[in-house]
View (cartoon, one colour):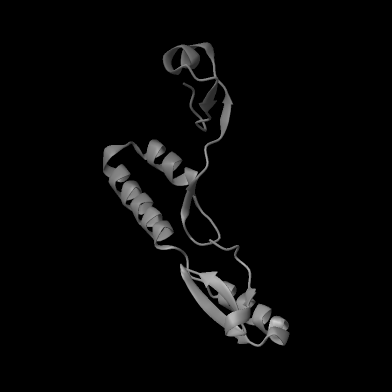
Length: 121
């Protein structure tokens, strides 16, 4: 797989880039490197998010909907606070941790434990 930047293909006398598994011709002629990079930048600026990210966001939303009925409101809000959209709108989970206390370390074997705002483990 090629790097995500344009390259010149001598036998086709054109600039190409690998985009979503396909080779896309950006510009014709070896001297059109500037034009190729301009087209490349437009192509990348308009690139849609990958389907996997959309599925992740959908699954997180479904989990939060299910969580409303299964957890108490404090826990449900805690989960909602952990899921943050990235620049593509996909849900990303951030967990704030602190050194674990003796009880948590004995029960889980972990040196770090999640910080639950307003609660203690």
